Image (cartoon, rainbow, N blue to C red; front, side):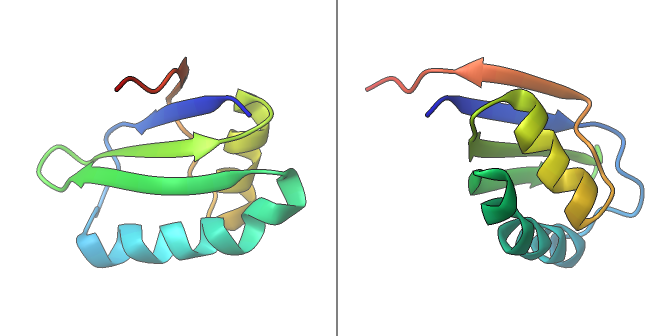
Length: 83
C-alpha cells in the first residue's frame, strides 16, 4: 500500500496533548477507510504537524482526518521508504 506524509500548517492552539488526542481519533476512524496512521511529528511553536500513513490514496488518508477531528491536511505527498 502507498505511503504518504501529510502536513498540517498553522494549527492554532497546537499542544502535545491535543495532537495525541487527534491521533487517537484517527486510529479509531482509519479502518473504515482502509488506512493505517503510523506515526506523527509536531512543532508546537510553528503549529505544524506531519503524519505518516499507509493508505490506498491521499484522499482516503485525508478523509480519516476530516471524519475524526475535522482537521484536513494542507499537503499530502506520496513517499517511498529509504534504508
